[in-house]
Image 1: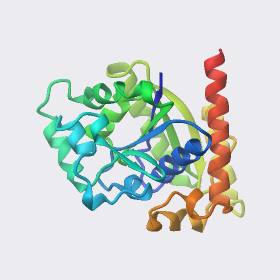
Image 2 (image 1 turned 180 degrees about the vertical axis):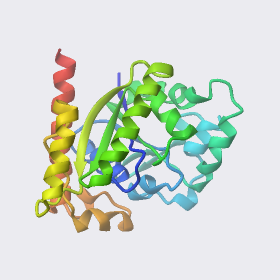
Image 3 (image 1 turned 90 degrees about the vertical axis):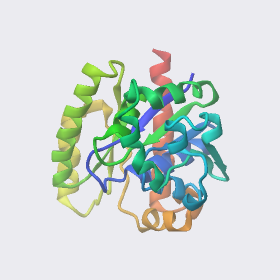
Length: 257
């Protein structure tokens, strides 16, 4: 049975979508069956996986409103399989408020796909709203990207409070999959200081791989490609390849216990 993982952080600009796209792609290249579910109305994860957001007919919005099945919402690209989003999704949060068990709509939809994939990743919007709550109720665990800067630590505290509340009231099985340090700059003492603080709190949940600041990571989405397909030899690409292997190793270890 596949594992559902939400990639989330209430603070924007931490590399959340970059991680969702490139970890998904790296795992596919490692032979894993992966589905990316885009829950952000900006649809950046969708376009970075080669989806034309302006031509989406059935995607996350249609799935959440019951207009299409989970299987029918999937777009297949040369980089992977995506339940795609665009600005149409921004109205879904309001529509869901009127529905019964509105926090669990995504969970019910994705559960039917578990046997078809090893991992289902959900790219969450950078805020706590109905779309994010649906992702947190649907997932088994959360992967938290943390930018190596001071204000990232403040946002992390808010996120932990949110996860604690979700675990108490909505999804008792939710767990922290891992914490990923992003935009690491070895020239700055601050990067090392933030890394140490995060490791003190999360201990072995922090991935040993750190994602560096890398211009290729920023350029790849504008070409509608994951960085691995845009520039395989770049530092950003190689970091996500290593992360995928560490991710697999950790999950194999959990499965073996």
